[in-house]
Image (cartoon, rainbow, N blue to C red; front, side):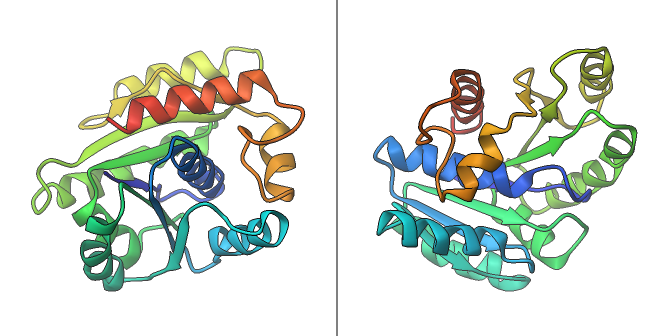
Length: 211
């Protein structure tokens, strides 16, 4: 299973979801490869912190960019149960390369106008990628969703109308548990004390994308 977490819009929480999903799978006994395809290298930096804190990350992490994401992932994937690729928040060669090898693209979207307006851009990339990778599944999820108010409902309605993209009605809330856990080199599933809602939301998302 090769999962890409990406969007052409930055600041939507891609890396946070990617590292939490990778750890969630590793906690289930899966052999996981985390590919940092973002030039900022946040996933690799997190993995280094995690290794310092825990002794070992529990997964393998590599940094790949551009066409190397396609070629190297194809070579490495058979050695792992799951591959999670985190790519930067814009239209890059890394994102395009990742889409050619992915089983599923997870597109985090915050319930904000600028995020919603960017959906057409990622939808166009998905259409192009499907000319090469016709089985590519592309799913949208609300990330950093508001605790209350009507923005979530309005955003969900917009996402549900996106052409060629599947909307997952499994919002992930804006919770302090995610940055707090990351600062300690952990996922929300490992944090003490646990945030039950954060754990539940992440588990539900993992079950929906790793099928």
